[in-house]
Image 1 (cartoon, rainbow, N blue to C red):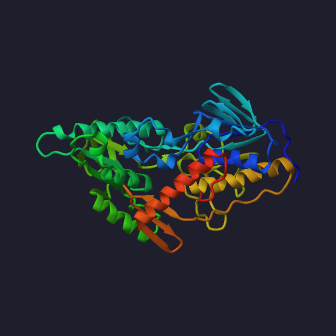
Image 2: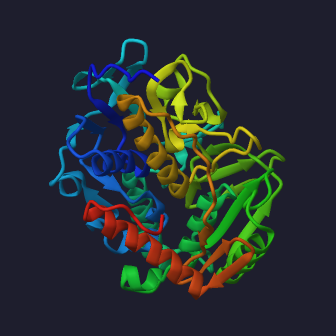
Image 3: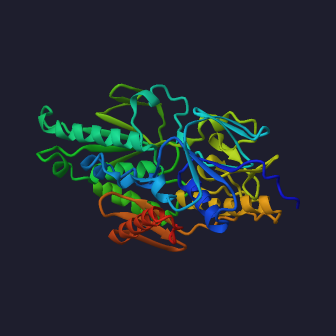
Length: 396
């Protein structure tokens, strides 16, 4: 295989789990051999898997626990950091247009993650909160704190009502966190605990996850006080109201949208093959078909196993696994070595279920309660410490 001409740097778009790993792995495998430019809108790497922890956010909304400065991560590397928003990607012209100007690339890794998908539901974007971005998770936490602070003055026996839309892992974790948080401790005074409703829509609760894990999660939500409403999709949202397709209406103090994600508009508009939610459909080596040296990784990509057709999940674990192979293949393109096909192997599934509770599945073993919660926390803390030191995580 002839090597690709080195007519520009490796440009990595996005410093999430995938982008950060691509940059770190290329630097580790081939230090200083290739110019690498890492682009992100923000100067930090956000620990998105922890943004459901709304109680912690409400207690310390300005704390830096959820974001690690990129300058600290790469202070002893040759990786160049460039802050800016991606406005367009010209794959044939090998150029990315940022709001701060164009960038030429010799190799490209598209790791722009995802955004909330509203599926055309009227009012969803305007009247619901979400946790897919740190700024939005902080805003939701502040709003929940304000609702809790005013709850003691509600008329009669009324309690605040929070409606969470979406019965996947994000919706489940958010609902459990809100229901189990000690809002009285956070507010510093008497509160009425919220009534939390989880609307799962027409899809099964935690669809696609192991049955035993789903059963434990459902039981834990019930103990936490979360009411699961299944079988009906949301038709629209209005201020303080969530309308279902059968005409019923849930009045609420806060609505939270956790119904799914899609690729950012700049990726959905690319003239390439797309998968679900506008994700870029990639080949076996994670390259974008027809564009050698250009890779899509993590939530921005849709990878399907060529033999089984099974799609890699949109998780941090999968994004990091893909990024390691993509980094290897970026170097292979430059040196003329064979590219390695990606194979995804699930190492386990963990779903947080409120304060000191979780459910986990590894192979045929299911763990739940406090042990699963401690395991999840240990994995998240180990990842954060490894990232801050500029080292690969041993657990993700």
